Length: 132
Image 1 (tube, rainbow, N blue to C red):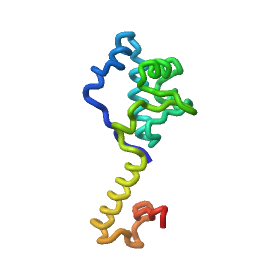
Image 2 (image 1 turned 90 degrees about the vertical axis):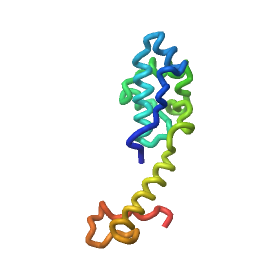
Image 3 (image 1 turned 180 degrees about the vertical axis):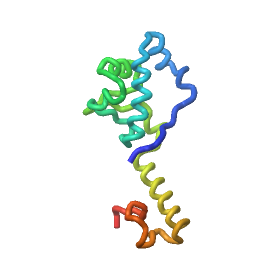
Image 4 (image 1 turned 60 degrees about the vertical axis):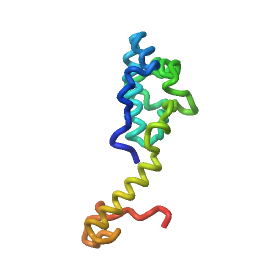
């Protein structure tokens, strides 16, 4: 499960890490960072970017190295971790809980309980808890 959005500090262009990249005209690294945020949010990876995703976020190993050099990414097994992800973004677990709560509230609003009527198409019925 992923997010349809990620949080982005409105002062990111003044962050010294981005200023260092901009000073050296490393625009592709900045683009890769932003695309990496979107990738992680959309795929629910909690800030982890796997090696195989570099092409999807318009990056090469060169941009990854540049992002590591300014400590925006940290190398880890299988890829990189975005610095500070957990401090600024909702975790995949939090997203799943929020989505379930919204689905349950919608079922109550639409049907008066948490279960959709039997004539409701299966894709619209509440998904049972995995703990049940």
